[in-house]
Length: 304
Image 1 (cartoon, rainbow, N blue to C red):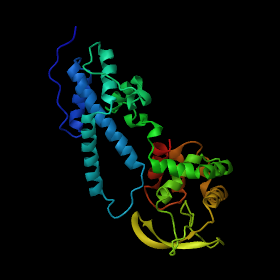
Image 2 (cartoon, helix red, strand yellow):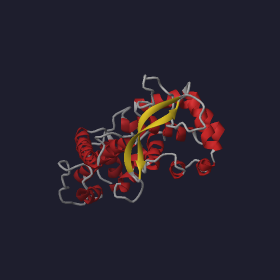
Image 3 (cartoon, helix red, strand yellow):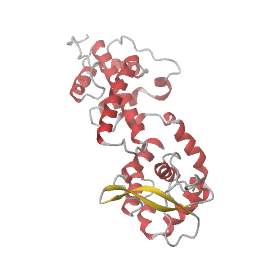
Image 4 (spheres, rainbow, N blue to C red):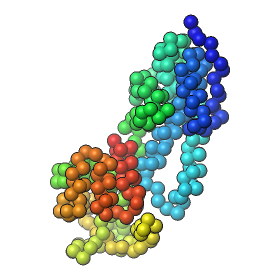
């Protein structure tokens, strides 16, 4: 017998991650009626889309004058409302949730059709979705972790494909996973869009932001950069190393990491992205107080 329930709360007019409506979402998923199940599934679809959008923004370095707390707040609000609008049209995720939750509750689904060859059919499975809806309440890891690796942006794939062989060669020399070094090169160069160039526009091929000290005998370029002094950003002109190729950049990076005792803990980080990133920051590789967080995020969310 289907248990009678009250009309589920309509969350369609609320933001996708409205915390006040989260309890309604979870109760609706367990309410036992087709209408309640559909409402909960639709809202979770909006949450899932928002999580994917947030993951992509977190994995993309965001520097500049417009990158402040106020703009971040408005960007977050826009992402939430956009995800809600996308969910209204539907990407197929709600259909899979309805089908799975209906089976669990023993009720008939109103509309649980899964499009052949669609996103949900090929990339998601019901067991993961069931765990993810519980995770939305904070009991497990974020549902965004089930986003397929094939969702990488074109610029990420292009950057990785172009430098993969160089990263693999450096990995053999250092023992550091290739994707860790690709992540650091992405962070330092803005996925190749903010590479260090000389005043004449010549590319330094310096993917890791390595400065030229007194012991450097090769080519150099002088570039204005942001350094953090006592946690506050300051613009300075610094001298950076210049290489003949990207391959030389990776080779010099590998030499720096393996020969400088400051980076012993980085080499000992093994396959842990967070330890690798924290080791670099503690060793003084960069002055940005959020360097480790940014790097770990790129490695885990974008290059996973």
